[in-house]
Image (cartoon, rainbow, N blue to C red; front, side):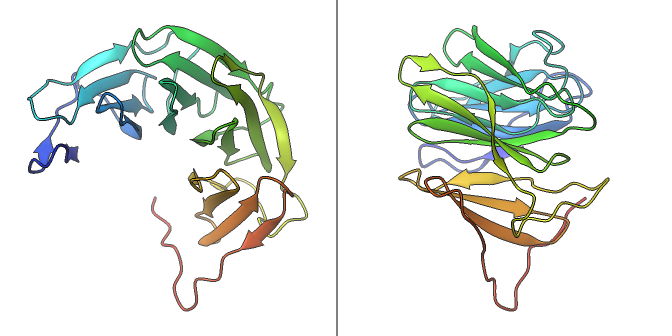
Length: 214
């Protein structure tokens, strides 16, 4: 993988091990550390995009804390790393400095699940599930992480799930946390979700559409 930092040219970072299968990437602007998760083992790697060269290292060993796979990740302003746990139906929160587990979150899946991506605002973390039409929310304070809850039922909204396919995927938040932007590869659609009213709106891309990448 390649990254740019501190005004330097693009650099390549080699992940240790023979079967990394990198998936999610998260960046901490405070330290300039970045984190890469493995969808093969749940290992999380760490390196830095600052001026000085730094080898990529194993930050968290795979298959610990029930973290067997890693998909999307995000770092918040408190230096907490949020991790989507794929088919385990779990999510995890770690301290980016010490690597200590702050909280393991379980959505108690009944049937297929794929916790795919996460975004954070000042007061919450939001997780997508590609198989279950539900957006999950974790309340946040500067000092604490709440329990995960099924915040928004997507049935009956413009986001229509198709069985056996990868539905809602990537998600990002507006700077003020008012809106979430989510992508759905199956329909090549892009959607806006209002965190105050829970209203879901399809974003008109004109003649363009999102490309589905397998």
